[in-house]
Amino acid sequence: MLQSDPFASFRLDGRTALVTGARREIGRAIAVTLASAGAKLAIHHAGTAEETRDAEAVVAEIRDAGGEAAAFGQDFAEDAAGRRLAASVLDWAPVDILVLNASIELVEPYTSITRERFDRQIAVNLRTTLELFQALVPPMAERGWGRVVTIGSVQQDIPHPEMLVYAGTKAAQFNWTLNLARQVGGQGVTVNNLAPGAIHTARNHDQMIRTGAVLLPRIPAGRLGRPDDLVGAALLLCSDAGRYITGANLFVDGGRHIT
Image (tube, rainbow, N blue to C red; front, side, top):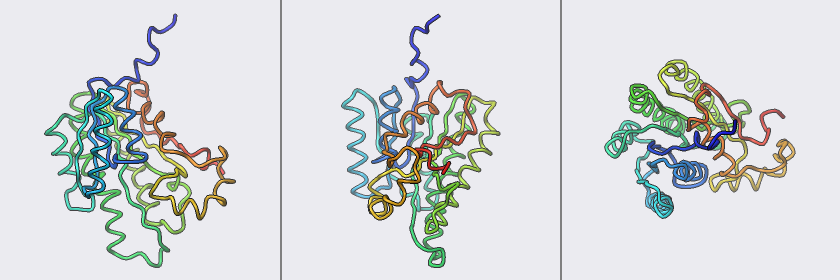
């Protein structure tokens, strides 16, 4: 018997999603897709003038398409940034879906890493993740429905020699994903990790120009990824279509991890 609507389980009507680092590129693509599926979107950005303008443009795009969205600025390098962002968003709406996309990568030899640059990556990539888990996951579990998607990296498995701290934080984040999935899986909350490979973004544009020719032969798909290559997997993991998937690490890397 055919289903009346095979795509119904992908709908997110009545759900609210917080996507961190959503003002452009991967975060923006995921946020717009979740909004297209019916979710109400909290668009996080780091709070600079440029990021504020970008985030407001994403909000306007969602609203122009008939959706609901609001922008929330918070620098994740600051103390208690995750708790402050969670409080602001919860004043607006309960959060059903948390997509942790914001991160920083500082490229340098391991011998040059300073305490300040180490601490900044830890704060943005890990400490704020923990604070958002603490603030937002227990209410999801109490309501009996929730989705957490961390955005990792192929560097969890194939670390770049000049991104020692960044790669380490992504590996640690996936370990936390597994840990949390075990703890809340029986409460209607799924916790999964999406691991992009070489996605061509504004942040890594210069690096891709320098290394793209060397990298392409290592990607079975034969091309660099685009931000919109992640949206199908993200929608699956954020919706009821993926309700029996938890504790998973899904590479979206054109096969880079198998070479």
